[in-house]
Length: 238
Image (cartoon, rainbow, N blue to C red):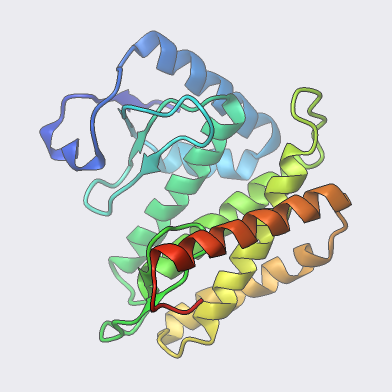
């Protein structure tokens, strides 16, 4: 994989405030994340290598989940604040590349009724989302769910239970959002085919056993997000 580090292109300024562009640091951390993908997520690694061309460093991050973003106007570019570890970096790459993939599909195929102006609850966002953005989030979160499902089989002495909790959380919120999109009545034929296909692939994962602690923590995360969202968006229903 060959990636350009771009901290100066003015047309990428919309991603947010630029961060440090130390090529040594980014090369080292990207190499570690790339190793994770190549060793345990080979198919995802091939997709990332085929799509990801430009890394735009952003300010912030370093603790917890990094901020990341993509745009259909800048195919191949991923904006990212410094991830705290290789797993978070690898997850961010999968997340954003899948956004780019579906964005490319949307350049040629409508997935939602363009006249549908309703706003929906997305269990990974703080704001009500249009249906198209909800479907975009579902597609990316399906890929993240698959990422953490694979990571469940990898021992993690430093953070035991991390992958299991992430998988439990992601499979639940992705299924919830996909089900909401499927019953919305605002999908095109292509959109319904996509959403129904993702639901069919995800459904068996919901039955895979996980530690009770991971399930309990995932339930807590879902409930906390829902409560915050309702408080921040009075008048909207979940």
